Length: 92
Length: 243
Image (tube, each protein chain N blue to C red):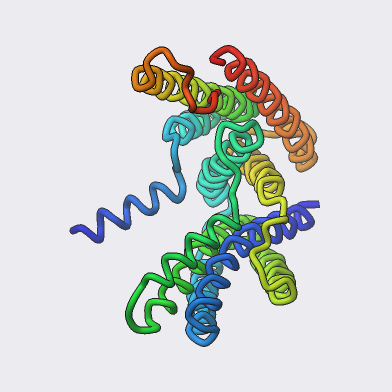
């Protein structure tokens, strides 16, 4: 059972990677395209629009996460060194 | 045009992955000897060739519209992963791949490891197989959807040859190769083809037919550079703000 779990985790990391929301959004966008094309609507802009929105959101999320982590590091360093300046470099 | 992009994507993806594999193989060969490293590399390349030979014809037997929606969606998810990482690295939100540091860490680990040369074989095999798996996946899916697995395989093999020749000549990790720029390019190509095929497979009709791929490639490049620029500006402002 363990090897099956490991195999599943490997394929998940391999294809989906760090941000599962991108994969979920792509699947929803393709399904919406299928629905719209059956309904004879203009379907082609759905996937490109979803890609641009999701990519932007994912980069923004990574930025805010890095900023939050940097602030937490700085707080810990400030507590350790009292009123002295932190030796840690400034992170985004 | 499709064939040129197919060859380029396979060549560049293979070059990036083989540069990373070369670092591991060199570390093994220098610390434990070339014999086990060569066996590891040969076995891994053989296993990758089996995946392409077995998976390639199987995938081309599927009906093209069903194939394109499934393969296009998977390629799009896979390509977006490459593109996202490349944007994060270009903007400074993720550290760049440091081949020198990876080489030093591998050498250290191999020197400390005791035991049979199976260890060296396994490290070399894993290095080449895991790095090459993405290329094999790309050759099977991308080449399969184009019904041209042969051309994708030639692109991948050409890159392997170039990296091996340069690696043998330099005899050091190829730290000067602009890995992130190559990954950026491959990520853009995979994403553009993924968007095109997944939407077309789902029934959408692209304005301009196949030429829409060039439009997608251009549009995605502009958006990606804009994201890198914006993220870089925020990183700079953020570090000034916290200092």
